[in-house]
Length: 184
Image (cartoon, one colour):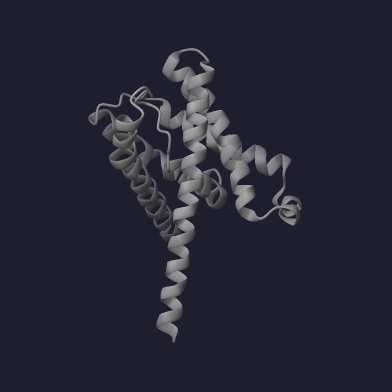
């Protein structure tokens, strides 16, 4: 039970932090620089990286851990003037989970790991999850399959995934450096 609460807190804080950076910094900058992009679409959606990691490490339980934070951020987005469909968090989580399931089903990690580094495996999960997420959210948003909007969701998810991983890489390197300095 303690591990479940611990995992819930880590996933929730990571998701809320990533979404807050997106909502508070990236979206306003995007509205200034790219005013013709619809407000529901972020060209750099950092929470996708958190979703990918959560599903990789926690499996189906990540849906339970991510859902409250997803709905909280959906509510805060609506307060910021960005109207999202109430089903968007569910569609995003299911899409990302299916991307994870399809990846581990058709590309088992033990086989793929011999050919690719682990970050590329994460990238494959992110890509499949993003494709399904973009299709589902485009249908929710436009009530039809708009290829341009779906491509925008895909681009935003993947760019956010890569930036999220880049940030995490430097955070972990810094943490390792701190432990080496403290051990010396």
